[in-house]
Length: 113
Length: 114
Image 1 (cartoon, each protein chain N blue to C red):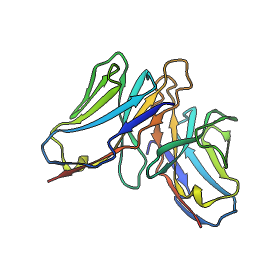
Image 2: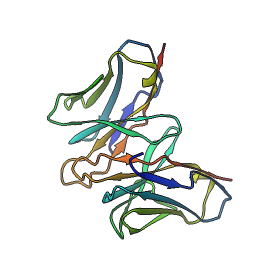
Image 3: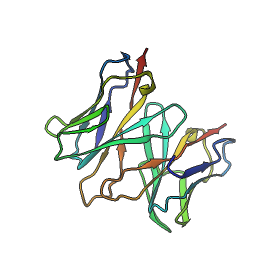
Image 4: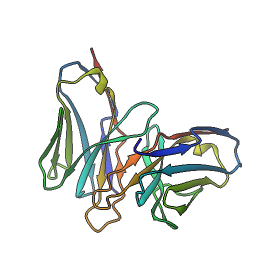
């Protein structure tokens, strides 16, 4: 998985609680992304980062925030988890702005009850 | 808005045959198109990239074509093997100068039977 780890790998939480997912890379890639993957929707971009402390919104950013204080770490926070945020979350990294070829982590399966 | 369509029905083929997967797109003129493989419970893995000025790209048993007039890419696996069974995603990249964010299709599941 190209030197990318995600933690936790599985999490069950209750509606209304905050949740933070962590993505850690050892590749020193500049760009990092958070996606969610759901049946019928495929992969959808939540937020992305183009450098330390530089982030921007993706297609489905409502209810999510991110932070990147170090090159290697990109955190995704669900401010108040809802059942609609039950999903599999993938982190990806890239070092090529022209082609945007991405390398994905193993994913985090999140269940919000 | 930009839209990518891949056949949502699983493709079942016999070992040794050529598998052909289709990716169609609308309202878009991508500079690149990429194909990824995803196994159950794992993240997608990059396979191939083809540029808008390339008609065809090959890598071992894989071949990708890119027809910008038809707005379509075909992904071929020759001499398919059961180990090729997976979901294959196509993804588009914007033209140079855009943010370059990838847009993914929903994927087509390939099942190769021995």
